[in-house]
Image (cartoon, rainbow, N blue to C red; front, top):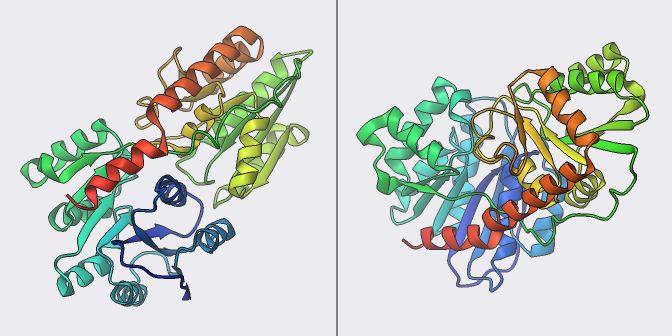
Length: 375
């Protein structure tokens, strides 16, 4: 375990518990902190997970003077790790514990709350319901019992929890707060100018719930069907499915046209988004995708899987386009339409940017959480 401390003060202490690797936790945390201009609160971060701590998270904490701790744990239940988390909570004496995710992290939070009952416990649920395991639903139940508030990202998610647990999930416990990002940082770039040369991209953790095979197959169809147009596919991210993705790229014979970027820090991700002409998000489910939010804020036309947690963000033929899950031919069809229709690309990208401005500002998100820290 590694701990880095910063200067303290008398403000209310908000202790965040986050995943150490790539994912939406870190993005939301730093978006919240970035929107607290005063700042009104003092923040602590505990990063825990099976992955190494992202260097970007470390650097952001140092830059923002946020004391943080990192602990690498084993997969599954790891009681020794949770004792370490509990001791960190005891040391920091937070007024609010903010858990980014439903899972085993409720254990040390419960232990701490027993010793300091006045501590406010907030839990943020980020997993699509249809992808939750029985164990994740089990921990969800305990979060409903113990936490002051359970934050969900959409009304559909709140309704799903109510339907699952009935009166065990009272409306007063559930609060809907959309994720947010700095829309002045994620904004349209000036590099997408070359007609006849296009870049399609996707960024995410590389894991089984992301449908990269369908994206690669659709890209192969485009390469075979379109002539006179140069199209390249960029994939950013890393994870357990990287070997399978590389193997499929070789099998399809598209090695020269696919670039795998691996893990990107925030500045690299900004450049990545601004280099694209079209953003694709191939997935089996989300709750509220930070990647889609970033693409929309960047003014990109978006094509995404028509699945729960995506179709609440992408409104077909308005701020983006949806295709049936795992349907490579339909995905290829929409990509071809965008690649060959400049007016449609421009209109879709502009609509996406406007939607992000109206719905995904980190300042709006911060004001909603600010109320929860006290009420």
